[in-house]
Image (cartoon, rainbow, N blue to C red; front, side):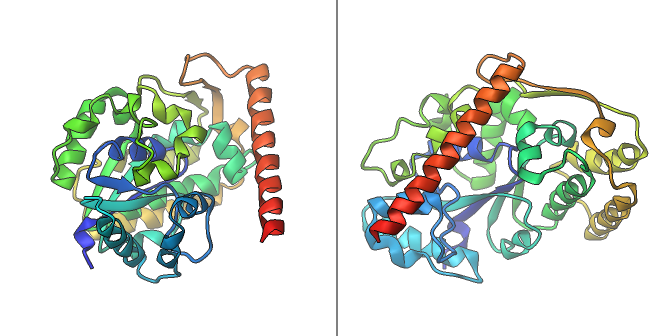
Length: 320
């Protein structure tokens, strides 16, 4: 198995994982699947898109204890078709406590954003249902981040650096992957501009993630914290790692800090209202506040998307 050729992008939702996929896939020798999960026999939405283009690749999707094995087979699959991918992988946007240990033998890029602005995003509330209690999600987010420092072959990418120092981020990616990255210049203009005969075009994931097709230049959240002993205890631990993502921390220090984070459960419940003085979301496209009209429009789009996916599932099931 060519473990050095397997790369995984890991991070909680809304930390820049999609943007990173868009960046890396502009390199002709890199193919990062989009939430395709080759290591599972259950077919995900994006796996279905891929299989419609390559039905002969169905054998790649198997339940595997070794996650990288499926991607190694995929690398061989593409090379037999004449595609010269040097690196192949996938992205897993979630807080999955058991995942990191399964990735120890492979390259991992971990995306992270400041917990102060991550927790109060509407999409995070929708995903984790934290309006009435942010505490457990906040602790899990920080522990997941700290546990990533235990991996032997990992690069941490802060979302704020992708926004304000994108050239520097590209340089870091090049050093980590030992590859020349000039093809990533102005990558946002080229994310969706992929030849139809290229396997990367089979997923067309960018249609649902337009923020990954624009130049990073603005943060999408402004937040002011309320004074609370939970923040006083959690933030010094989080900031130590967040401000030093390239530091090699001792395992004993990491595990000790994780134990300190777990002890903060005593502050539960802590609602968003008690945790924040104020927070405001912005559209990355125009940096305007999310008014009630915009929020309703976003909710309506989500509802339409959900209904469409359910109808598609029912029709597809009936046709089978």
